[in-house]
Length: 235
Image (cartoon, rainbow, N blue to C red; front, top):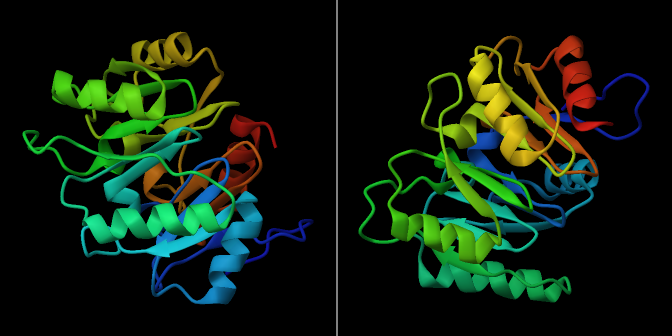
């Protein structure tokens, strides 16, 4: 872990030696989901960075939480392969923190299972993979309480990895097309910036977690990239 100069709170991390923390973790305004094996000290540091309560779990019997889960203040969408026991664990641990966790699986009929990869959301709007079924769109709308649109970012259908959105702003893949950026601004009604993570990686969601209270980035992220993150989300 690195400490960003001038800040008392750690902002850059790695999980099991990987700076791609967005593959293994996801966050909302109040909760941070991490793999069960993450050391307590590291979990506490990431929780402080995001001012969020930490829940450790597995999803679909893997540690790829960021790929398989996406959420906001209203709930979580998880892979259809998520175990009942895993859902109950998240609900119970959230309740222990005085929080509710409304959780829905993607429909079994959908071939797409990596919810975190294919849904970009904040508390009011979601952009999703163009091939998600209308049944899946309905589940997302009802569970997350959002208006749902379909689209791409930099031509990528995996919009959940191509950008990160909070209730204050969006940071998107630095090769996103102008019409895509304009569409994001229109539907989210928020400022949209482009950038990279982990020293030039344009797939923002693979290595960045953010909410309106803070952010956590992969520890290969440069100072200039951290500055771009802070500009995009108003820190």
